[in-house]
Length: 299
Image 1 (cartoon, helix red, strand yellow):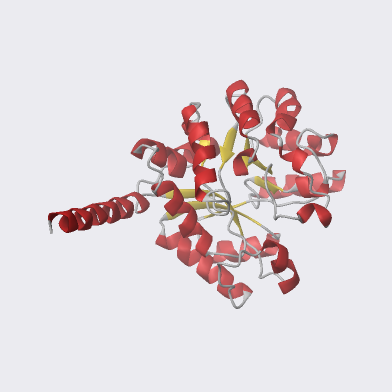
Image 2 (cartoon, one colour; image 1 turned 180 degrees about the vertical axis):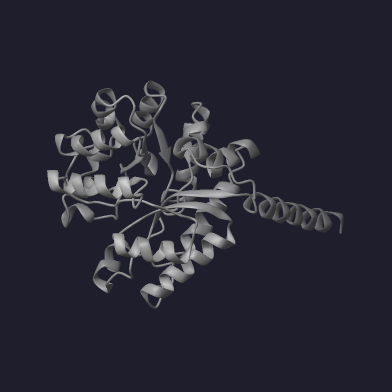
């Protein structure tokens, strides 16, 4: 009987702790405002464990519901400009990002400049140029980095995993996930605010080397905090924390078509016993406030 009561007490304590933690403000630095994908696209990208929303409006509704449920006070949202604007109209918690998959022409850069000046774009993310075979320090990205540095606009660049098998249909190459490929760009742009999305997984040692060498570099743990096996994610995250970088790790969900992923990602951080309460708060909130220069929201 005593053992049974002890188990019940432990479960209740954990549930209470989990509620208290998730009731605190959270910032999702990597979220997408997309319309519903086609079934063909789903074949590669869509995790079988999630139920597909019935429409684009339902995808938006469910995503914003999760943002409210988990007290996500800010979310960096990227996608087609008209879709981002639609989502912004429905929620004042979204920070408009700029998502691009291709290299930049001078005309493209000028359009982005005008969007920055008007306030339509506040974060240059997600740069998904890895899928176009472009490395993080390649010349094609130089105009964008210069623009971001000029206006002090944060940049988020995809460096890490894609769907298994994506290299057969896109120009995506795994070697472009290597965080060391960002080094020359950081040397050329010392004032650039940039974060590596997906924490460069699975290239852990290289990610640690870059965080050590470049104290202004931040990372997000989006998608790896729910998509890959939990033990692998914990091994990766613990090494980053043990190396002394818990103050530069930011929470992200990489929600694209699966609103349920937001809750799963949050739960994985909450359940990480190797993280202190302070480290969890830093990952969920404090680090993003510092990096994005955001107004502090206590509740």
